[in-house]
Length: 473
Ligand SMILES: *Cc1c(COP(=O)(O)O)cnc(C)c1O
Image 1 (tube, rainbow, N blue to C red):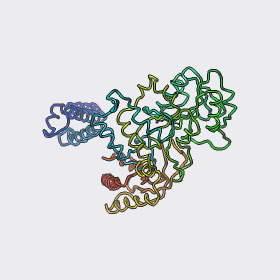
Image 2: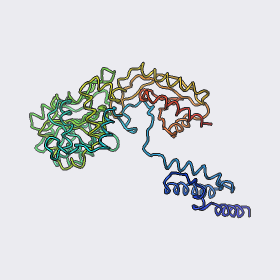
Image 3: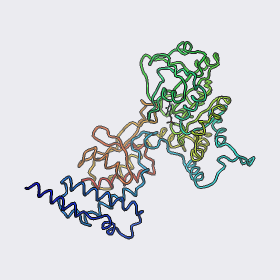
Image 4: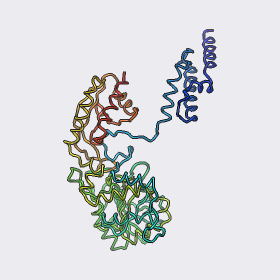
């Protein structure tokens, strides 16, 4: 009997749910949102209350009034109207953060992007001849100037660069790679899989930890088209290890007339070891060592837009340029504009270090980071009582982007220790705010590493934290 009554009440309540048209009549006429989003928000709210009633969580007609439903509607509509692709504050201290857009562009590159987007350009128009030109020629000279290579080419990303090179140079033939270099970069980019896609036959040599010159030498056959070296930038092998230096592979390649390629991954044009980072070969050094083709990313240590850069011997680059696959992997005009601006900064190393955010963040000294942390702390203290204890603490930043995985850079963070909610609750609240703030949980605090927070973001970050804290219980 009792249960029947409940079911009946439930039915009555379900029938009392307002109809879509009735709900629409409640919406302010001044509402500027597109009608389809308004309707979508209404349907979402109605579905939500129906669910709640069916689940027994909602048992009163009071929940179905305009007064009760409109705030739910506003919230849904705001969510539907907010851009999906948004700015966030990166407090993780990971400089080249692949999930947060990798490299930030210098001002000059941003200006280039704006112009390329809003105005016509000579993208594929030769201003000297008045005839059709090539988009690649616009940055090739600078790329060669900076790397010392004879020729160069730019494609969509480094994964595309590797695929295009293998497809051009080793399709249906053999490419020799050390077992210690068959890496996975992430996002399902694995060297053996890319090889397969390109139609090159992978010939693995050596052992996981050690590969010798004679391993390559003995694996060479009539079918060998390529000796491929992959820079293992995203993991480190320690202990009993050895790999064959590029110079020796180059000598072997020359002797047997086989192309030598190096995938540098996060290629850098400046030696960052003077900023306390581990010594990594620069692109220029790899070119100078005689690699016939070198590939690297545009948006890792280079600090530019997403792109894959290919440099090397002119005859080989010409073959790559002519590959029809190149057309499918080509860069857009925004990339070109951004890349040229970044290359121009590299013409003067001091300008590059100061003007390219990735380099500026990696080379930023501890004192400057500490100052930013103090500023944030002061702003937070000024805001009065917060449900968090705040402090400035030492931490370590990371390079990211699969480069120098073990390397920590001494840095300073603002640590937030919530007093009224759990640490995960605070982390999630900050992540869900109007400007999402992403930090790193470390023991009992949420750390905001100030290396990756720009000077001009500090006040915004303080305001975001205060706003989120005010909403906490
Ligand atoms: C990152 C990386 C790639 C892929 O580069 P994307 O620009 O991300 O496509 C390829 N090879 C190596 C060694 C890498 O580190």
